[in-house]
Image (cartoon, rainbow over all chains, first blue to last red; front, side):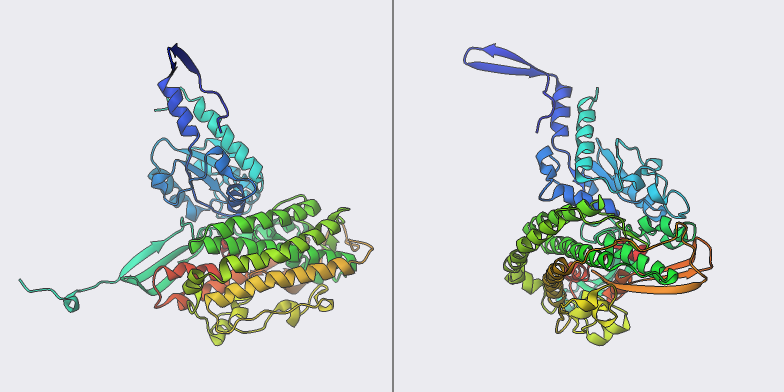
Length: 166
Length: 372
């Protein structure tokens, strides 16, 4: 689904036309429409992430359906759930294993800030952005699948607005 | 140079690491397998990747404040977690819940049980290579989630129960909708049977795989469908009836030898029984209050209480010690997934690596429940 139109210039020639566009735009446009997420569920939010991929919400409408189990083939990491100190090292490792360009969506309050476990919990990391850079934060406990899809579309806009995608 | 033959090969044992990021471990469980070629010699589950310290948090929250936390324990069965916590606190306070509230509790719990079993059914089939059942299961699950959302306002973490009753009455068209859902869902379970239960590949992957003998299941403290799959007809709803389960008629499905297929069949049959319970509750639903008289500040007298229910994964218990203040002195959670997971090393010994998923999926654990 093309949400924003690609800036193009149409050169009319006899018998057809030639599309002229900016290389960066073309790259961002194709990149944003085939984001491959890493299947990586941590806690409750992972169920809503599954629901976003399943029958009713169907994220393949927006080009996310190629969920990869290995970080080496993925370019979008959805941190769905509570990040604990034991998991922290693993998340960092997974993020480092992903090839550039890579994007991170922090899904749910736990991944955003620590959420309901901010106080009095001795294991929960207070936000995944203390470990890895985050592009889009989706609030909610857990966010609805619509919320996650909105966050992903926001990420697509962000990718399209990149000045130098390489 | 000496000529090699198959007998002269020196094989070495090796360790295989599975998880915590693995699509089939259903969360953040790490399994360390000791392997000889493709054969499993030993398996050690490494827990704690989702340990959030619920029991410690409970000591710093008032009784009413802790209720929303319980949803996040076994996040596929939020209603059950609410239920058992409320039962334990009600036992401490010696409150009787009005009959309408009890019936509503059973109604939403059984709907939640079907939803939870569907989330097991889909990914279990997906682990064995069938993707379609996943989409079918989630189609039906969304309808249950719509019903539960209409009563509680949330899709997953409901916090619908209150100490002494439920938060609000059922919406006007709920009974009609729930009846329509029951009628819709009954043929769907038969459809799952046609899709998967009688599929020859599926049966070959699960039959006689991961056999759990009756005695071993009891020794390890297994409960729920894992125990019933081994042929023990133990269900807290029948053996120690709570709420209004003693007024409802339903059967306890049991397996015969306790392999993965038996555990699968028990859960499929449980979905049918849940529909039966829902239909009876919808017929019998009495009028009246939905909340008992509960003091604004819950301060139980010093003492202790243990409550248990039959959650989708088994015998779920809360033990609360009160010292007379408005916060629990100590709270212990007995999680069914933890005991069920502990039997996994016994089940997979001697199997091939690809059978681990067939066994692991049939045990159906939730990591929020295991690690707490």
